[in-house]
Image 1: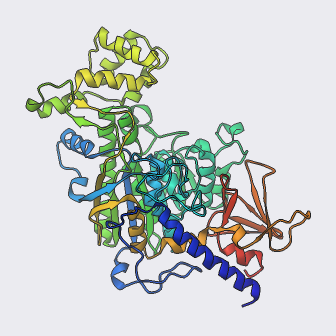
Image 2 (image 1 turned 90 degrees about the vertical axis):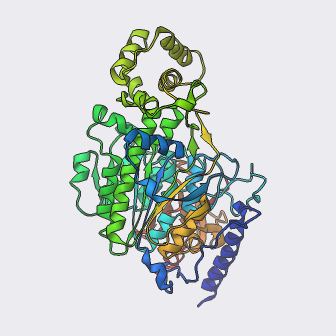
Length: 583
């Protein structure tokens, strides 16, 4: 080993220690309830394959996570009454999960998903990067400088390095907070163009959901401002690209992206009436399992029932209960696969509660005599979500049209006073959209369902599980990632060290002499939308897994991540050998 290689290894060992210390940045000071999922096995950074896992750990080959975004057990209870039969999830109750983020007892979806994807808590709005020290809960330590904004390896990325197939399924845009946290690293969840680029170059095997607008440049009808067409990148990389239910169902093998809406997919209750060409969540889940299970090394799959959250934001009980039942159908598909397979772990849990739904409200003075019919009959007459009603109302926001649509789609004869109240809430600067206004008035006057907020809530959420060695009891959301990594045979800290080396730790900054020496680097921000890291004569476009050197393009095992807040750039460790001509 020459001196240069020795120095590189020493630098990586220093980085190992720094990242190990940084891990405490989001750790609870009283860690009596924390669990160590590091395992007793050794993982090698050339492949991160587990070489000495105990035989018992080999029982789990596949991992499926299912997240009903933004809900609580009240939704599950209502869904059981509404459906008239037990749910799949009823058989899987295993424990509870705490949800707080680094900066608030009430998390948002991006920080929550980051926690169970990476094993680290982070700041609300961040996507699988280390937290800021601007605001930190009193029970947590302040993050170290090294930890702030640093990309954090996810269980999807770790699974991919183990040779497993990977998949993401959602009814939102796939660039929305929860799926984004498994395949991208940004400090602003709204930066969906950047999220999409990273997701494409992460080489996720199967992606189903909405959000095609973030693949396509503005001049072609999309939302991308960098003029890149990522659909072409997918096709060049051998993906099948589909945009309808029938096309998806006809897939039989190979890698696939299916984006079925420019933005979000439709609520499940609206799908038949408004967009019958869109697949259901259970259909997307089933097809993803069919494709991913063809990988002999196993797979990791995330499935999100994205819109339970939006239903609860809108305080719309029929939207919430029908999307939750659609989620339960997806869980059933996953469990049936796991039952037949015998080596699959299924974990389901909300990322947080939203809306604070109660069965019983302050307008229901006779709550001790509430019947099942009182609870479900008003909902049974509803054939669209409140968002669907608003779409049917369209631009004719008149009293008569509101009455007509409520009668047609919800079976409700709204009074003049109720319609007046809807319009007052909608028009008088209360900040509520028409669907929110409709739900607020109709809930209060025609249902026994109550709500505490249009926002998120901070309580623990249910944990549902099926499969060998599944967890039970109370977990913090960060512990889920460590548990998955252990069972899948890798270590997240090893994965972090392999995928995200801070470039200044292994290369020298450009000295400004007008040319880059072999071991000097420069971040070229000439195009702010398409930064390029240059190391010697190698070019690495940011947010891709591409290295170009002497006219040859190499695909890396991870993506290049730029953290604008710190000016730091992170590279997969294999870049060292490529730049130095060892590969």
